[in-house]
Length: 358
Ligand SMILES: C[S@@+](CC[C@H](N)C(=O)[O-])C[C@H]1O[C@@H](n2cnc3c(N)ncnc32)[C@H](O)[C@@H]1O
Image 1: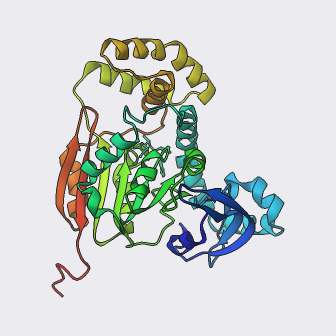
Image 2 (image 1 turned 180 degrees about the vertical axis):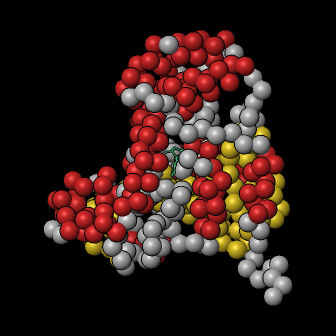
């Protein structure tokens, strides 16, 4: 973690700023130079909450004190006491986040562990293709990106973030799966930052980002509109919110897959891997080839996991998503891209003093 990131970070529960205790420093190579980064540390909220920095990444999920208890047992002498304070004061909240996140974190960690950074395309696109699609989705020109502050909520493998940072914008990529570790490792751009966080508890300063983009993420949470409403405050007045969502399809095979996933997503992940490998994969691979799609083995498996493994996968009509923007006082609401599986929709956040009649 670079120290300059600290001013953007907030406790996801209390929203207080964070104080840092640095435990170890290392050096990271970027394309243009080498920089000192904080490799391990602890971030303290003003009250009760604390979060680790591990492998250079701030782990700002509510349940971090559970997920990383080995780290705290090693580095924080009063951890047992601090943990019991959290458990006593926030029992319901902790149970809620652990239950809602457990399976989704695991399934996406597995999905992205299959992805090969050196050879694979992401959703059929190389890095340039992803950047071009991103520009279309957010409805911006490349020349307008330098100097912009962008939040990519649910950044997955983080490949897009490199291209966005190279264009001159600063981008904070957040994901709550362990994909964030490989995303950080493979990044060579100084303006691309990575944090572990939950879209329903965004651990960043509110009303700060010029553009908040969340592609293919919100529909994988327990409640898409709730996640939208939790993320929306990160956009600064006059800024833009952009989300990509699945839409419903009237297609027999599509609906069969949606039925199958109700069962497969509950299976242990190792079993899912072997099940897909021996059943869906061969069919998918051959059908892709017949259709002229050159997806390789790992790209095909990532696609299969993406559909059949996540606990939640909702589909939304364009008008329904538009209503989420209008209800929250956004204007210029617009569908910027649409394909077989989903669509991207953007809106502009009203300036604070606009529409005020008292
Ligand atoms: C289908 S992938 C899309 C990744 C990336 N945006 C892209 O377009 O390639 C969905 C991502 O959302 C992340 N995700 C799901 N629920 C999340 C949550 N509540 N908070 C943060 N990330 C979440 C997953 O870990 C996964 O990496």
